[in-house]
Image 1 (cartoon, rainbow, N blue to C red):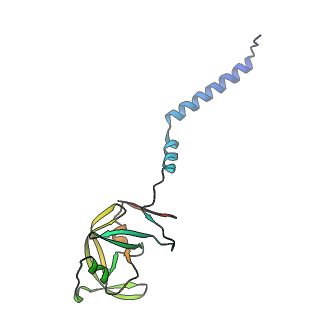
Image 2 (cartoon, helix red, strand yellow; image 1 turned 135 degrees about the horizontal axis):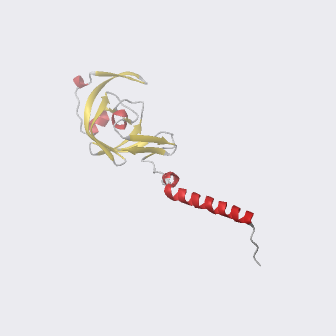
Image 3 (spheres, one colour; image 1 turned 45 degrees about the horizontal axis):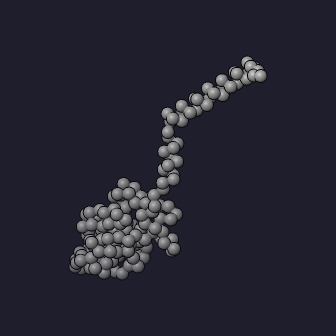
Length: 163
């Protein structure tokens, strides 16, 4: 035997209306699903962080491979004279007409324009660079390259570069 209780019918109707409203709202508003998908599909770093804590980029400069230290504190891509010569950039003494203030003091530098610099699939042309007239532990990938990207993001495991 089925018993009909009016209070139960009201509670059931309210629960059904609430469930339908929630289902309709979820079908209409898909914002959170996109946000969750973006978190799940995190980009892999373009430049990985090395054990020494620095970000090292395997770059191609003027068509030649070069390992570069990513340095957001450097205003420009910076090369030693030996690096520049390996790339085919020939400089004379009078080309070193700039003075750079570096962590190890002032040093003469020459301004050059690199035809192309490519890192992690992002290639830029006509990149300003400085060549210093002494040895350096590593070439620097500075802001004359990084500042022309649409974005770059530092993460604990590496950098994401966006051309």
